[in-house]
Image (cartoon, rainbow, N blue to C red; front, top):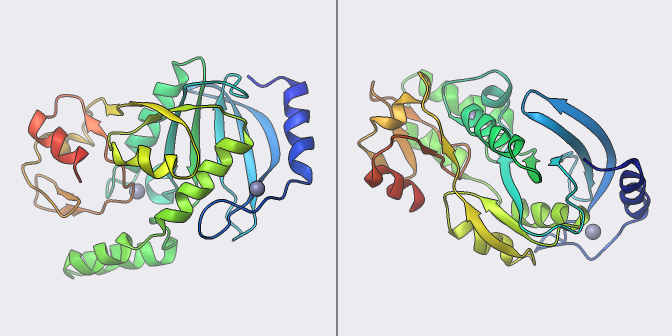
Length: 251
Ligand SMILES: [Zn+2]
Ligand SMILES: [Zn+2]
C-alpha cells in the first residue's frame, strides 16, 4: 500500500500540476484525492483523478507500492454501470472486472484503471437506447454502430497520463489484445509485457464456451442472441477452444 508520506507527496505534486497534455486532445489529469480501499479482492488504494477535458472523474485502484516501480500489472476497464454494478448479462463487463480484480488481488503490485466512459464513450442514455432498440427487434447492427463509436485516442492518452501521474516506470498490460501494447506505447508508456486475462467459467459466461460464431467483434450466445461488446478487450474463458481464443485476440 501507499504510505501516508507517499500519499501526501503525490497530492502535493499534483495540486499545481499542469502540462501540455497527452495525445491529440492534450489531456492533462491531476490526482485529486487518495484513500485506502479494503475490498473483497484485497487491499487497494483508490486514486481519484481530475481531468482538464470533461467532467469524467477517472479512478485508479492501486495495489502495493507502485511509485517508481517496474513491470506493474495494469488492466484498463471501461465503465459499464449495468454490467459492473448490477451484474447485467447483456455484456460480460462484470466478469471481466471481477477477473481483473481477482488477478490483481493475488499480486504484490498492480493497477486497475477504471475509465469513466460508459457504453464505450457514448454515455448511459445512448447505451440504453441501443439496448431498447434491440428489445424491440431492431437489427443489432444499428445498436452496435452506436456502441462502436468511441474515442480510443482519448482513452489511451488519459490512461498514459494516469500511469505517469502515479510515477509508474514500466507496466505489464493485462490484455488478450497485442495491439493494445502499441496503443499505450505511443503515449510514452513503457510496456514490458502482456499478461493474458483468463476468466474462470460460470453459469453466466457459459455462452462464450459454446460460441461457434464470432463476427464483426460481437458474440452470439446459445439462444442466438447477440451480445453488445462494451469492453473492447475480450477476455479468454478457461476451457475455450484454441480456435475461439485466437479469434478473440484478432478481433
Ligand atoms: Zn498533465
Ligand atoms: Zn457492459
